[in-house]
Image (cartoon, rainbow, N blue to C red; front, side):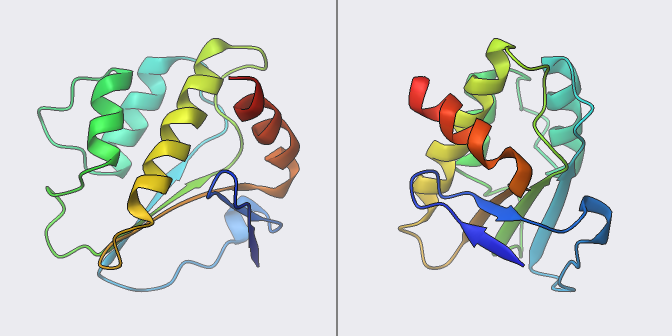
Length: 137
């Protein structure tokens, strides 16, 4: 079960990460992000694999932002779910806020497109910190 936050566009789930039931829809790409990420290069590697990012992905924030607003390389896919086990990066790490801003902006950019769905999910336990980080950034 998920609940949405209208300020961020993110969905929050109460289940355990490993217990989430994933719909068996071939037009939906489901990507999972570990909570053990400590460095940007780790995040970029996971996202490159999980989201099947194109070879031209430059492994930097600008390139990630561009890719999350496009998805044209995903033929036959009409939606992406990016499910996080928790917040990446240690508490207080600057990259945590940057990543959340990029995700929020990408989610909002897709809300106007009825043909493609981009959902970002986090555990309910992270809702407060996510809202705080996005308010202060």
